[in-house]
Every structure is written in structure tokens, then in C-alpha cells.
Image (cartoon, rainbow, N blue to C red):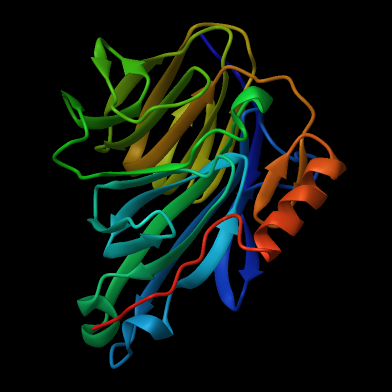
Length: 286
């Protein structure tokens, strides 16, 4: 059975005027290979706004996958590859930046105008050096397309990897298990974890007991790499994500939206973005 190495409460950070909860990175923990960053966005839009007035406008990425789990509301994705999709609650925006892509993340067309709740988690997954300059791609995954493992008092959606003989459909460049789940109060689940994987769990809300320790709303647990199972018991109704993956074990150099392996590659990424090699995105709104 896996034990908890560290419990980290999410900290508030200001990202471009948006106040978010950030469990990773944290003081003393820069990353958990291959996971680099986790942002939890939770807000209520007041209404009366236009789509182009909210969200995040065009910006480039290179060298990793920015992945978004949508829990409430909807997100509109546009990119320089020509993709345009809206993913609603329960779905996943999966993008591999590869050698470079420019994208924007707005909110569903009706949400800014009508107002309403919005909640999502974005996390960054590193890519091995040999794939960092591969062709970028985008894959929207709806709730209906996400495999579900339903047990007594729990629902676990498998986004990537294999969980209890059920496989997720999101492609990765290194072995991973990416789950999103709900547990009713007094519900218990056991999550098998490959012994070679680093693993973390983050609670959107609720309360659980793991390894005789209590995790509460917006806590992240990092697990020790011993044992092949995580046992979770919910003391309150809980929503969570679990990210586990085989370490890439390569140097990481990052600057803003670029994740490479050394500073020379970062400088090349900055230059390529400036001269348009990562594509140009001109947003069009109705």
C-alpha cells in the first residue's frame, strides 16, 4: 500500500489577473516528474460579458502537453492548427504542443453573456526530449467519450492509461495513469498504481482519509514510490484527480509557456515564437 510522502495545501496565485489555486509547484517541490504544474480555476462569471473579454487569449507553447479537465461550465479552444472546439463539464481538452502551437482558451459562448459557474483544472505534462519537437496535435474528449469505472459509492473516469481493465483514450509520450473521480461519503476505493510511477492526488473539495492521514479541500498528496495500490476512504463527498506517471528523468528548463531541457532550447523557442514559427492565431468571434 502506498504511503503519503507530503501533503501540500494549494496556494493562491495571480495569473494575468486571474486568482487561481496552485498546488504544484509549491515551496520545496518544483515538480513531480513528469508533472510540472497544476492550476485549479474556480469562479462565477457575472454575465454581461463578451467571449473575447474573458479567458486567455492567443499564446504559444512548446515541448509539453497542457491538459485541462473541465468540471463546470465550458471552454472554447482555438489554435493555429485550425482546431476550434468547445468542451463542456466532464470533458478534457488534450493538447500536445510539440515543436510549437499557438492557442487560446476562452469560455463557452453563452457563459460570458449569461453568467454562471466555471471550474477547471489545467496541468502540464512534460514530454521526453526525443518527442519535444514532434508535430503538435489537439484532441477534445467529451464526458461521453471518457471511459467510466462505476463502483459502489464512486465514479472514476479514465482519461489516460489503464485502470481496472479500462483504458483511457488520451495519447501520451510516456506511460501515465490520469484519473478524475467522485466518491460519496463513506465510500472506499483502491487504485492500483504501477510501482515505477510517481503519483499525486488533488482534492477539488470534500475530505478523504489516506494512509491514516486526512486530506481536505484543495490539498495535494504526493505519494512515496513504494507499494502498488492507493486506498482512499471518503469522510465527505469528494471530487479528486489522480495523476501518476513513469518519471522521464531528464533535465527540465522552462520559461513561461516553453518547457525544454536546456537554456539554449528555451532561447530557440522564444525566437521561433517571435518570428511566427509556432503559428499565428487570429480569433474570430460571432
